[in-house]
Length: 131
Image 1 (cartoon, one colour):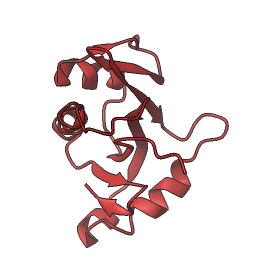
Image 2: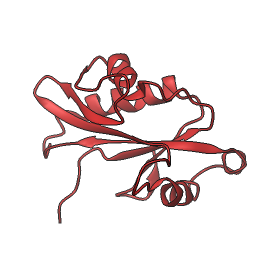
Image 3: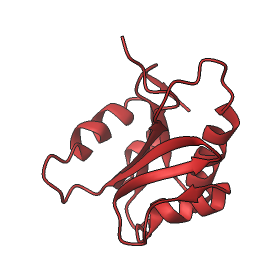
């Protein structure tokens, strides 16, 4: 079984500024990004270790926003369930990290999402738990 290290979904409240969000998250976390302001997906690097980052606002073909919203809201608080969420930002490691050498890098990315997107609900789809 293959597990994507540090896989995280962040359900973003409606009204969140999605413009260049991936690049802004990378900058805030102190990483290098291959994303340009209009990109919806790309890579973020801390030295030689790379993470993918992807934004889904429900407008593209194959959007998983509705399904993810339903799953994530099962771990949301009652107050959060009453809010409208308009996008999901997904990030994860692109290679194994058995010694957890890049755990702090993943934490920096998650903290950047929380700082730039107040009210985001972060969820680990592999464990079924809220982050």
